[in-house]
Amino acid sequence: MRQTCQCSQAPQEMVQFQPMIDSLSTQASASSASAPSASSQDEIQSLLRQGCHRLGIPLSEGQVQQFELYHQELIAWNEKFNLTAITDYREVQTKHFLDSLAGWPIIAQEIGGGALAMPSLRLVDVGTGAGFPAVPLKIIAPHLKVTLVDGTGKKIAFLRQLIEKLQIEQVEVVQGRAEELAHQPAFRARFDLVLARAVAPLSTLVEYLLPLVRIGGLAVVYKGANAAQEFIEARKAIELLGGETVRMAPLQVPLLDEKRFVLLIKKTRPTSIQYPRGQGLARKKPLG
Ligand code: SAH
Image (cartoon, rainbow, N blue to C red):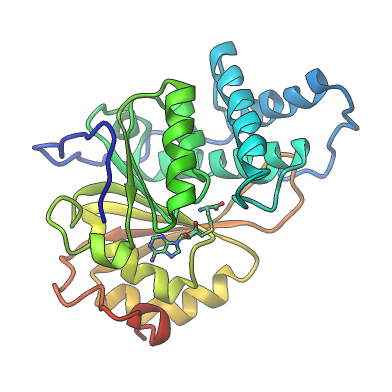
């Protein structure tokens, strides 16, 4: 089933990625455990400001308010539906907001700040859940054309409400399974950036993601401490699906002392039409 709000058109021309333009690159620092012992809301709010500063991401007062509203909506909906296990204020800032945002400087390093600023850039977040990582990225980069995909109705209902509350535009919310959507012309090889966090093991995930990436575009996968092992297991699948791993970058999440990584996979060849396979095969029998 496909449901959308505010559809965006596929760009007619492909975005040309340029060599590294490092305008958004990470400033010195940062996976530090030196978090302040914040107690008041104001102090805690400053976690986000401080974290974004370390990431080299400018944050306006309006954007801080959007994150605040996001947190409130997440907590309110979580009382009825189980959207996330992370509800503590501080943890939402670090494990959801800053973790999502920490991928941005790495993507910028890869494709160039100029390419990232292009208004035609299309991004899809597969298995976005309560909106991570794409909604925080959309807040700091309002020009992005963002598609949020999830298979679960309650997540989709939350996202629709959230998008309305945050008053953000050019966001498409789609309920569906990635492996089915990837066979639809409106989705197949349409996106410059295809993101996923905490959805499936890498060897399964690449079969969902790479068919959606346009040639020359990037799949960006957020992973934890096991990233290197997952990468070894998924190598053949990546090759088979038309991808080429660019790099596995440590994700330096400010104020969070956890091992985090981002895998960047560039699509260099078309993906054969037989992928993703149906009947849950990507999950039950990963390629490799
Ligand atoms: N990315 C979010 C949510 C992770 S939970 C975060 O990092 O917090 C995984 C989410 O992926 C769930 O909401 C689940 O419904 C969705 N999901 C899992 N497999 C999927 C698939 N094949 N297609 C679409 N959504 C999927």
